[in-house]
Length: 419
Image 1 (tube, rainbow, N blue to C red):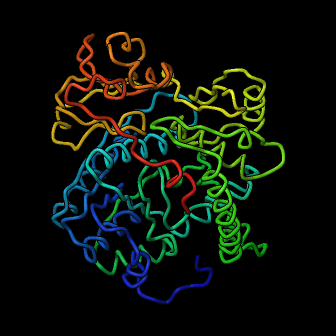
Image 2: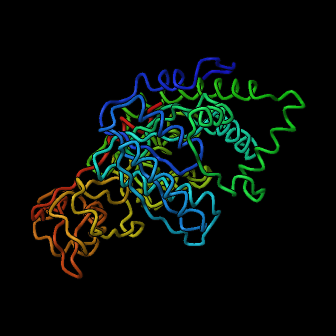
Image 3: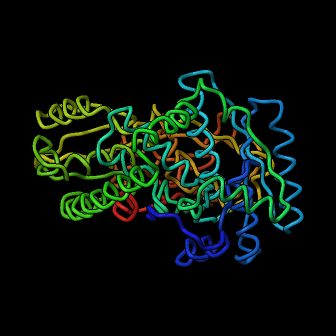
């Protein structure tokens, strides 16, 4: 990560950032703000337009959002780029901004994977990087948290690209003005009720004390280097001690020894997040207690995961059926490549409006051949199934296919420790 000002023009810096991007369909997450608008125009100028798909999430929280979405739509149309609008509604639980981030990503990732889009580009800037570091310092984060954001990483089976991460927000605004490109300003970006806004305001005071942008970015650079080393060690440990079987993970007895080493802890966290579909890490003390219970022969649950002890001292980690949510097939999804269910499964078949995708659960009794799969009952109950009302249409993993297939979207070992 650059920690010194870059005098190169914005387009040259963008091109340098995307030089090694994966080929294929690319999703552009565009809100209407200056950062993502600049990203969309740069991508349209320098990348094949037939590979680009613009997506905007409507949070339904502000009356101005409709005008912002229309701005994105008009500009995307002028650039000959398809534009998709996704809906997300807050349930009123928890922190609004955190819930909006999680809901926005969930909507985008499900949309992307359902349309065979394997990479998504986000408009985070150098300013966002600094603000993220400050917020995580305030929370007492360790090495992983203090890495802030990476230029490229994997998340939920998608390659996430941040080509503006080394460009300051002010520089982007200057480029937009020079190109006569308009954007929308979100008033919540100046609302001191939100952590990110307070971090932005705090930074001005920290600069006066010598904690400059350069120093903060150097800290991120150091932490990212340390993080890469730890991830490589964890990946090697997982290769030796964790085996994936469809939607389940098998841990050796050595992988349950979390008391002293970083790699087993890191691998256990990765497994819980991958199986449970969680964005946030489990509480450390709780994880340690639960794994100790498994080592003592108890079957327990944590974060939507069922942890079952094995005779050899290891553990089987399975998705907990009761922790999954159902998903309905809408009228616009009939032409999609498939449905992404529970953030891990790609379910494909004759899509039709009104179909519901959920954990098989007690529907297992309607699958006469499930025992022939040699998959444990709990694992099959957590596997995807297709319903029309109260009628089971298909349960591919349980042997009742009826023209449907179900596959895990991403390999645990390939994506859990990517950097």
